[in-house]
Structures are given as C-alpha cells and as structure tokens.
Image (tube, rainbow, N blue to C red; front, top):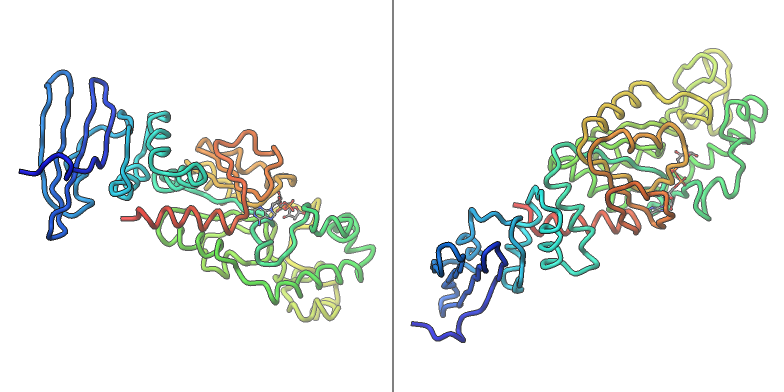
Length: 349
Ligand code: APR
C-alpha cells in the first residue's frame, strides 16, 4: 500500500457536481500506478486504478466530456497527453476550450495553439497568401517601407498603358524582378505549408504572389491569382517566349510584338480558371488563413470574405486591417508557421 506523499497529482478537473482527480506514482521499473478519484455528488466518491506508461493515465478519463469540464490543474507530467486531447478536440464550448488551452500553453503560445486546433479539426482549409509570404525569402513586398511601390510608382510600370508608352522602363522593372528571383528560395514557412497539404490539413493555396515559391516548396494545388512572373508571352499574339528573350529586350519571334511577363497588370482581369477554382475552394472552406497581405488589391482581397468558416490573419505588423478576422497572429510568416507546426508535431498521432 503506498503512502500519500508518493502519489503526484497529474490532473485536477472541475465538473458540474464536484472534481475529478488523477494521481500517479512512478514505480521502480519506470511504470506508473494511477488512481482516479471522482466525487460526483450523484454517485459519491468513486475510485478507479490502472497501471502503465506515464501517458497512459489519461485512458482512465476516456469517455469523459472533456469540453464540458474545466481544468483546475495540469501537471507537467500530464501536459503532453492533455495537449494531445485538447488540440484534437472539435470543441463547441469556447470558454471551456480556452480554459484547457490556458492550462496547457503559456500565453505566448496560445494563439498558435488555437490555430493548430483549428487546422486539426477543420474539414477544408485554404490558405491565402501575399507578398509578405516572400519577404523572408529576400523578395520585397509592395507596400511595406521597403516595398516596390515605395520606390516606383506602379502606374509607370505595372499597367498596360505603361507597357505601351514606355516599354524600356516596363521591361527593366520586370527584368529586375526576374533577376531577384534567381537567388530567391522558399523559406521554412513555405515548406510547412506544403507539408500541411501533404498531411491532408490544407486543401489549397490561393496566392497573389508571382514568384512561384509555393510550387518550388512542393505545394501542389496553388491558384496563382496574379499569374507568374517567369511565364513570358507575346503581348500581341500570346505566343509563349523565353524569360531570357524578354530580359534581353527581344521581340516576339512569331509576330515581332512586345514580350511581357505572365503577371496580371493593374486593370487587367485575373486568370479565370485560377480565380474560379480559388473562389470555389474558399466558399467550401471552413477555415481560411490569410498570410502576409495588406488586402489592398481588389478582387483578390475579397477572397477571405467569401468563406463562411473561421478566418485567421497572419501579418508582420498588425495594422488594424484585420478587425473582422476570428484570430489575428502578429508575426513573421515563417516564424508563425513554424511555431504552429511545432505544436502540431508535438501532438500529431
Ligand atoms: N510575415 C508576415 N507578414 C509580412 C511579412 C512577413 N515576413 N513581411 C511583410 N508582411 C506584410 C506587410 O505588413 C503587409 O501587410 O505583408 C503585407 C504585404 O502587403 P503588400 O506589400 O501590399 O503585398 P500584397 O498584399 O501581396 O499586394 C497585393 O498588390 O501590387 C499588387 O500585384 C501586386 O500581388 C500584389 C498585390
């Protein structure tokens, strides 16, 4: 018979009518003895015992309605096993779920843990990305203080009129952007996204970016709403051409017309197939995560609003744009994505 001080309280839970307490005592052989005490007023005090490995104690709680109960104490020994329960729960009772989240995770991790739970429990998740997704790959965005539009007026380089009226300036601008792609590689956040797709947690990525980094990192279902920079074609006969021909200022070899990058210029319509498929995916999604975009450009900025599901906004500087999102995580995309992935991996079955 053990004496009381050998038992460690692993978990203490508040219930409607009393408390549930799980205690454990490690044996000399590394196994654990567990004792579950419940004092539901209806049935009085009952005990259940079990033996097993450290994380097996929670099996005594199988079948309890976790999310209708409140954590009073979660010990470090039980935290891992409880986190696995909490993050996999399709919770309905928000306050109870948040109480479990607070019991398991320090303040700084709580938003990432909530996003991890939403990713694990959503049926269909779509990610929507902007240029902020590529700044950690050393590609400037457009509207931050180091952005392209802080150095160049977009009306002089990113419109059909600019292409027709000052082709040399137009060509030099996009040739410079193509040159910057040569050294650009997807950062770790891109690989997190492609692994979430291969692990079945993300259905698709809709991106405003034209740098091709999502595909480079292995993402399969990518809707490129603003086209792809290196997909050069003739502006007159639409014949495909080589990037090198464009960067050297050569004309179309079929009709002699001006070559152009495969991006959507301001005032042009978005590629119909990519837009239609992205819109359908978002409308069917129960989770849309918007990453690294100022949401300044129509119609792409309408996408996150087309979902009836939960909406998340990840941005390096929270400028208040995101007031109508269900969850806002302020931080750099690569860091936030890796933090969420670390929590997912810590509980992934
Ligand atoms: N992590 C997270 N967010 C970031 C990061 C980062 N590392 N770096 C920048 N951001 C944020 C910025 O704070 C900004 O809110 O990403 C956003 C980038 O916004 P924009 O520069 O406006 O880029 P984007 O929203 O993609 O622009 C949309 O505008 O000019 C057109 O065709 C162009 O596709 C582009 C469209």
